[in-house]
Image: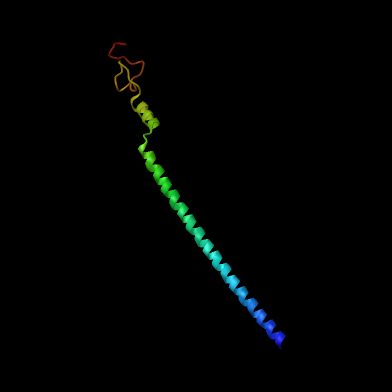
Length: 100
């Protein structure tokens, strides 16, 4: 009976240890997932903050290209004859004040 009791105790101990090991592994996986989720959320917050800061900085810098395009589209060009408004509305075949 001694060997049977030792074998039964050993088997029981092995099962209990297996369950403890399984629970520890599940807890480790859960903690790892929580840490991964927290790191992912932090990365998203940091990316969003960086994007907002980049947008704020870009709003401070004037868009020279857009200004030039807008100025060229709206006023054409100016000269001493055409004045500030340019000659956008004038065609070459129409008489002008100079008698041409």
